[in-house]
Image (cartoon, rainbow over all chains, first blue to last red; front, side, top):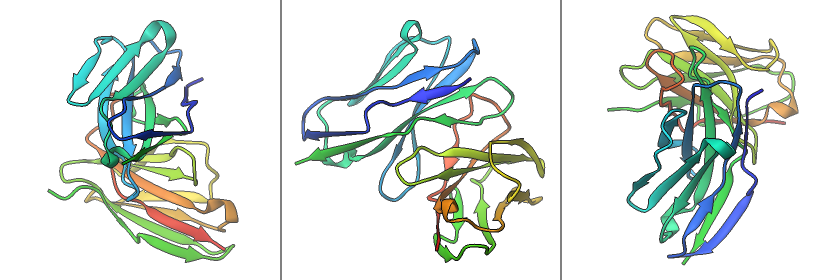
Length: 115
Length: 114
């Protein structure tokens, strides 16, 4: 069965601190895709990154970086030098290669960045 | 370039009533999916429409039904509303159907059932 677990319900940091959001997934497929989405108070889910199961190369994009490890089924997301505008709920999601683009979401991590 | 638009943004219904939510996909997209997001939870997949047919369905009762029109827009209907149907309903669009697709989400319709 497919499952995404985000064990951190809420994280609070002070501006300029680094913060890592954890994501653990379960799937029996060998081909799958992992995503991170951000949900600000407006409600709209904003796409951040996609990784496929064959690409374990970690990525840095500005203040964002991602650590994908198949051996531990983890896909963690780090924000460096956090800012107040980073405050939002962050969702990790899984999609399998089954001919649809159905997403299985975790329960989300609420990040609060205080000035 | 307009993204995904949903209407209405907020609505209040009472138990037993019926509701229709509407979604216009992003320009160029032909696939529409609906998700239900209860307070404090992640979105849950309801169903997906492609070529005007329901292609896949999540674990939701038949009270939840939908439709896709020739212009790719979509409606979500919920009959016999229950208190537990109170949630944010998100519409997402994409082109084709592939696990690699990046979905574009709308801002949602917040339904409150009293």
